[in-house]
Image 1: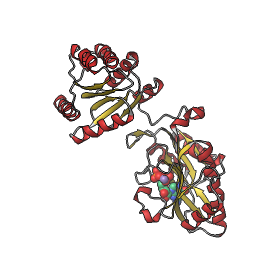
Image 2: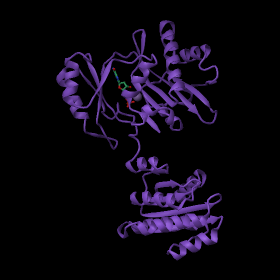
Image 3: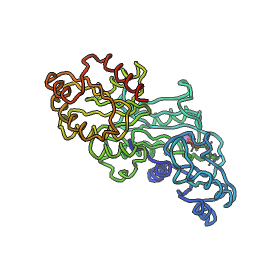
Image 4: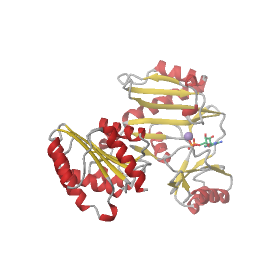
Length: 377
Ligand code: GDP
Ligand code: MN
C-alpha cells in the first residue's frame, strides 16, 4: 500500500486543481521559523506532524502558532517525538484559515460494487468511522462516463452547499475524481473540507495509491514509510510477508489458506505476529529465503500450513529443511507443521527426518502451536 504523507497528497491536490491552503513541509524548528519570517507561510499558521496515521488533531500533533517564535516552539515540540509509534521527521506549515464548516468528501474503491464510490458527509472534521450511516451519502460512480453532473449536484445537496459554494464543490469534485482516476488511487479523502467564506479548502489530504498499479507510478517508489524493514526486504524479493502485533509466525500458501490459518490461531487464543504466503511457489530456494525472513521477525513459534496443490509438499519440505539448517541455534523456535496434498507422504517423511512432525488435523496443529508459543514466553 502506497500511502502518501499529507504534504505529498496536497501537492497532488494542487496539480489537479483542488484548492489547499498555502504551505510548506520542513524538517527542523529553525526552518519552520525561517519559513514564517520569510513570509512563505503567513501567520497565524498551523503546524502539522507528517505521519501516516490519522487522529493528529486530537493527539496534539496539529498545533497553531501566531508568531515566528511560537511556530518554532510548536515545530520543536512535534519534531522528533513519537506519534502512535511513528517518529515525526517533518512538519507541514500552513496558513491558518477561519473555518465556517467542516465537511467530508472522499472517493474510494468499493470492492464489492467494483466501482469507485463518492462519499460525502456534512459531519466532517471527525473520523468518518464515528459518523452514523444515515449521515453519509454514498454514490457509486460508473467509471466509463466518470463523475457526472447530477452526481455532483447530489453531493452539493448532501453537504448543504448552494450558490457559489456549490459551484466550488463542482470543480473540486471534478479535480478529485480526475486525481483518483489518473493516479490509480484506491482512496482520496478530504477531511475536513473546510468552508472558508465563499470558498472551499481541503485542509487535510489522505491519498492511497493502489499497490497493483504502483508499477505505473515509479514516482511513488520512495514512499514506503508504512512498511517495516523486513516487509521492505520481502517486497524486493517478491515474497508476500506481513508483520502483525502477535508472536506466532504463519507460513501458508495461497491467500485463502493463509487467512484461514490466522483465524484458527485466533480461535485458539493465539496471536499471529507475522505471516508469509508462499503462494504458488515450491522453489526450495524461495521457500528457504522466505523462511529465513520469518526467522528474523523472531516469532515464539511457527505454524507451517501447506496445501500441496500445484506446489508439491516434498519440494516445500526440502526448502524448509534447507532453511532450518541455516537458522542460528539461538534463534530457533518451535515449529508445528501441517502439510497435506500432492506428495504428502514424501513431504512428511522429509520433515520427520529433520525432526519436524506434521500434524494432519488443522485444529490440533493450531492448538499445538498456540501452546508452544505460550511455553516459549
Ligand atoms: P487529523 O486529525 O490527523 O485528521 O488532522 P487534520 O488535518 O484533519 O486536522 C485536524 C483538525 O485541525 C481539523 O479538523 C481542524 O479542526 C483543525 N485545523 C486544521 N487546519 C486548520 C486551519 O487552518 N484552521 C483551523 N481553524 N483549524 C484547522
Ligand atoms: Mn483529517
